[in-house]
Length: 199
Image (cartoon, rainbow, N blue to C red; front, side, top):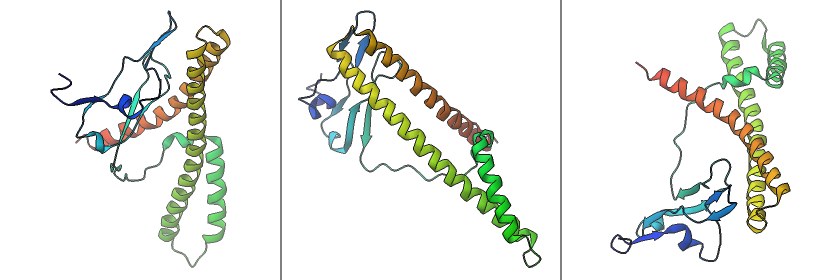
């Protein structure tokens, strides 16, 4: 059947020298290469990258495929309401608004103009704060994923090493906590989208 449909195990084809596993069976502490991505040879050229990601929670490692030339559509900006719960953000916003009102609240400026400009200040402050926060969060997640990958590699050589197993559990737990924060934001955004398109 593989020959009839001209199917190729893409990861193995693009990484012939690499030995990486996609399944880990904890009770036996064994690893195998059972998960594969099969593609027709004609569409392999559309592939930008294929990577076996770290095994963060399940027994199977996810396989990530990135296609060439795919761009995300632009989204309309909305306030991330989770930020309102953060003291650091609220203090920063209060500080910016105090300064803004001190400089702009005068007789020469209309209330409507002040309000419109204030919304722009709130948006700019929020985008700046959120970008910094996301960068830090993303860097932390990447460091943890890199550490998981390192630990996986070490555990392939010494599967019964209890210290490495413990480090793996702790690292996965830290990553899970960070990902939960991101998930709350995504769920809130999804609810908002479904609410907007409900009628």
